[in-house]
Image 1 (tube, rainbow, N blue to C red):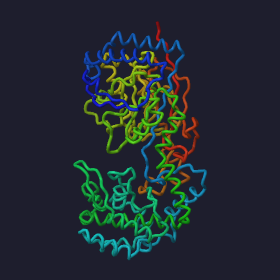
Image 2: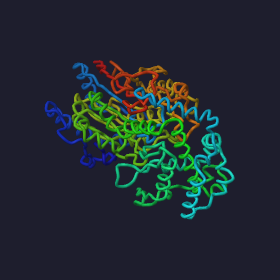
Image 3: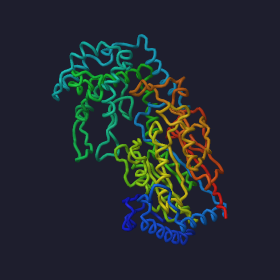
Image 4: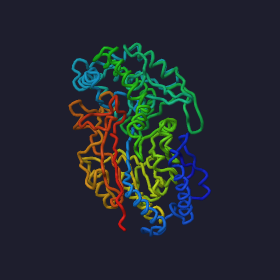
Length: 590
């Protein structure tokens, strides 16, 4: 289900289209559905006619519409009398990470994983006599071949940099751990641009020959790697989508100059030669990775391990995630998801999930990052489906002059009426890394609802990755207890109560040494202390509307959470746990 237009206008009623296909409702609910559709149409007509939901009526909360308030009250009474409960689940399913080695995972099935990752850590932290000159790994012959290629495309010659500097550097102390090289982005920039390239006309991206992506070619020695790398950069045409159409070029043409205005550590001379310099540094970086892996492990061992990890963590991530939602959390009435790709939505609608749920995506999807907040509504519980998307109301309710760090697709807010006639506002939200948008977004939701005579009668259910921290850096990260005080100030509570336990974690992830930002790498012994182990995920609702019957978290896909376990794992495909709660209505006072 996707809303094609946002403005509140009666003409819009015919512009919504629904996904999923098949018979949307169990036969026992069809008649009730017709009644609810009629009620929803009357409610929506009122909403539009009254100017509701799209404009603010003054500066303070408005009086609730008495008819809608009565319908909400009666619906809550009916729900309470029938002992019906609501199961709500939320999950940041996490965008696909193309580097299977980037984060420490729990891989008990194969002891080679811990051995190899620990050996790479030791290689980088204490290389000893393994800290050889770059020319012993990326050889003189390799540089000469690269030089010929770069001269051939008209770039400045960088042999002087090679002869007087780079070839003499040590691979670890002089290159991999050189902070200045990092701040100049000479190795990380080409990795970011060429690591994984999405191409037009293919579901499968193109991968640079390197250890740290899904490349599945043979990297068992440096000569095999170099032949594949050179061909990839200079002889492989890729067709990519740009704003003004598609272009087909060799990979090297995707590289961008590194500007001193943005990266001031780069010198004027280096800026002028930044294209060939970053190409050379990118080749050196990949050569060192291949050299390290073949030094600490037999090629057939680490390449077989990588193949298994790629299959489970990357290629099967979407099907595995959908299996868990379908088979374990299909009993939910509401599911809020974050960091969802367009492909994931399409695949969900084609499965049994599309028969069981209205699958609602934002009207304005994030096509660049391809990470969107999405809502699943159980068709049995919400027979008429979603009524309207009100994301724009939320975004228009931010405090004047305050810069809120959100991106397109982070917020999805909708209205829907359940089978007992209770009107709901359901919100899914993905907070920024530091959690600084979380409080402003909740404030905007509450403001938007309070200024509309229809929305003010709705019951809020809000599932989110709040990105809150147990020990936040003051002014730079959102403290979890301060966040709790914020939602309590709106007379809301959470599945964790009014005062959540700061050590009730829903994430446990930390970076390894096999990724470009070594300053963020965690030693195996420091995974717990230095990793992202925090209480980040929440489900909010009105304190006077519902009370918690049961709450659980899950990092196994089996409704169980293993504390002190790094994840994802081969069996659990996200770096966020699933959070689920069963809430029961509080019958309104007579």
